Image (cartoon, rainbow, N blue to C red):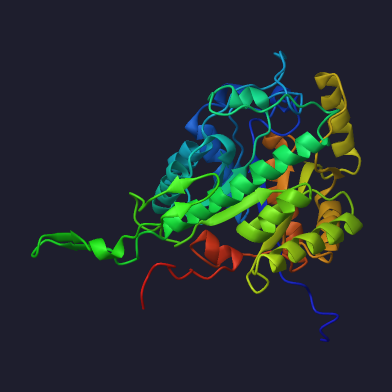
Length: 404
């Protein structure tokens, strides 16, 4: 078979889990479990189902303020899900109940300390035996900043998100996020792999020469190190971020292992992938593996037209049409498979799917879309690695501080 006719590499697939689903009226569906949203069993069931579908990983949404129907400000709605569990703690609770799937909680870098995050994700990597990841989020919301009182973020609304002041704030917050990731990565390396001796006979538990100060001095952080947690089983858990424009594309290109993007057609996908690859090259990482995943909100049904009808009914319950930063797909698993393979040819190596109604659309992904992709030779039929890095094709990295 010629190279031009050869099937492309198998896709990577993840799901983004948030509440009862991404549609604000999802919790009112018969399949939803609104009374269970704040239980460990609910999240364990979702991740177990995702693992049943052989997905690479799940991401768990998080934030530092109540969910809102507004992009930048809180609201007073009482007809939508409000409140959530801590994503990192939830991932740690359900990790022992799964064996293969990656667990990628969200952390808001703008208002948390990289030292805390490094040891939390390192701990998750130990609890999951090498399946931890991290999704970095940046917050420009004033009401989130007001929970902490350490910084002032000016009020922003839909009309002034693209002003010079807003662009300057965005650049500053993403530069801080890049430093944040660098500190976290250095702390993960601050223990060499064999720093723990644990020799009862000699009474030596640790080789202090194999713990390293990271001595990070930057505009946003000054961190001495070392970490209090030994180097994670993966060496470096997988770091990811969602990006919508050039400034966050540079964060993805320079600092992460996976970038999630939100194209609405093939041309946009090609353009964004090209911009991220250019940013990757500018950061001196051109030879490194960097995945670019497309994000889609999905409503799936086997009967043509049923998913669109379901979305319209949910819109009626919510009182307005549902919109998203990502493309909203309604259709059959076969139609979605067509779209994913088309976008894969635009340069995407995987997709992160956001179930419109988790109680319905998660199983439509794992039991409908996945078999369809398998029939086309486009998705795995068994897990081929025991770590998240292994599933995604990353080698275990050398420790930057270790002396050969």
